[in-house]
Image 1: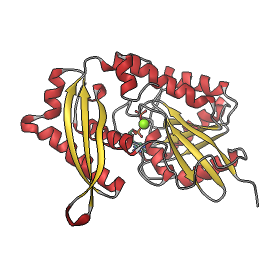
Image 2: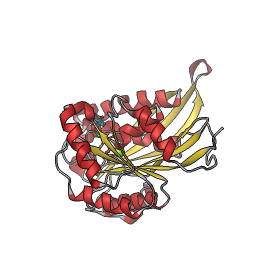
Image 3: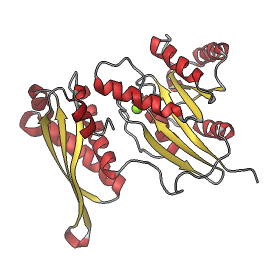
Image 4: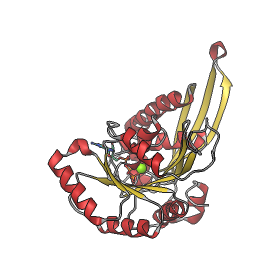
Length: 301
Ligand SMILES: Nc1nc2c(ncn2[C@@H]2O[C@H](COP(=O)(O)OP(=O)(O)OP(=O)(O)O)[C@@H](O)[C@H]2O)c(=O)[nH]1
Ligand SMILES: [Mg+2]
């Protein structure tokens, strides 16, 4: 029997490339949030996939973009910290995008500095004709910096099994770092707050979503009717402006109700328990540039 393999597998790429969607596909279940809006992921989130031959510790990272505020800087730091210990890097590109941007060049530069092998993952192949994909692969081969080039559709889980096999080949021999039943290194509170944020991103428009943070302030089990467990969850949706607060609440509270009911259903599915969710909207001006607020919200340590 061959030796057990393990290591840190980082997902890196521009905002919206599909890193979080691919991570869920690699894990075979939805663990991290995704959205059509860029800059959805804000933390380095570890998800652990264990089988008989290997343990892959995937790290979802925020999309690489030019920092505009302290939150962006904290996100950049999370990416750099992740790459420190990486064993295999998955560099995601949206295969439908024609241009290589300065962000892509920057990512190529930082991953080239690392000794770890880099798999270029051309994602969203369901959106392009085969000829365009072949052209892109040709371009990628010419770069001469990738251990491999693989094409996937993260939403359709196409090419994901092949990618897992390739990662397994590239991983070094190593021990089990985490218990085999552990799938994510975040608390249920964190996951609940992320699900609420995902639903806010889904329904809110324009500039409001980017300035939102969600903080679960209470989460505890109680015995409900017929002895069934109910989880009481209270959370604050924090925004930067009073006018945004009005938009988040909506006419007669309609928007907040929509966000809350969608989030509650998903949290119930995740916890496997009934949930009673109460949301409040608060204004915290300029929190994205406030070190204390970033720490309080878990974006900075
Ligand atoms: N058509 C198609 N859409 C995809 C695919 N993978 C991801 N998407 C969509 O692309 C959007 C961005 O996906 P995310 O997974 O949130 O992207 P991300 O790279 O994690 O983005 P950030 O967290 O902002 O850096 C979502 O609307 C996804 O549904 C794919 O294979 N095909
Ligand atoms: Mg993401």
